[in-house]
Image (cartoon, rainbow, N blue to C red; front, side, top):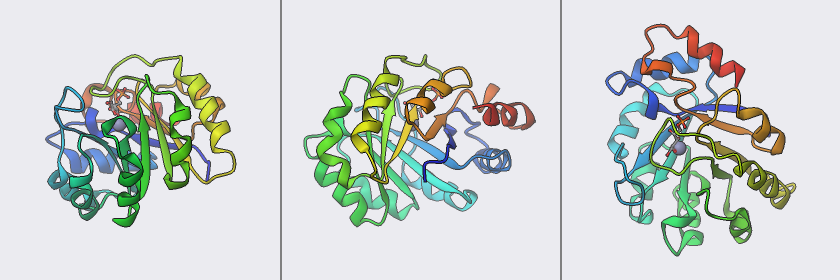
Length: 218
Ligand code: DX5
Ligand code: ZN
């Protein structure tokens, strides 16, 4: 299913109000809910753990898309699976045994995602595509919301789409996605659009209309 999916990142939401924030973005048409897990080691920022994922799970009616920016990954896979992750995405750069990690994610009952930093050629994913339900091409260096889209990643998305061919693998893009940057990556073959700051303008859901309009524009 290569229809375009919008996956708002709650990294840019009001952290004191996740239940209402999730309800609001789903009412505005979010297809997936993207949860950015950072460990202060693989990336220079700290965010959520499995307990937070478990707490927000009942509020998510769509898909919980968990992006693990952590290293190591394997010791935590079961915890995020038990917290209710539908998609569990690990970075190729997080360790030497990504093949094993992807196998473990599927064994835990989740869809397996593979994320690639901007400095990693997408061709590095080729041997792993049979184990992937999704490949996430980072269009910023991971760690923070609100960064500028790296335009050279559009060509990487195009090459990845060609590598994937007919396989049922989503291409997700993450970072700096907004109505001005999305069209080129969609044309290049991306079909899951993560968007944090473009969706949660101002970081509050007091009035969902402004970012709802933005979301459909993406
Ligand atoms: C970056 C995260 C992204 C981020 C996107 O490390 O993986 O999901 O929240 O935020 P924006 O859309 O503001 O770049
Ligand atoms: Zn992310």
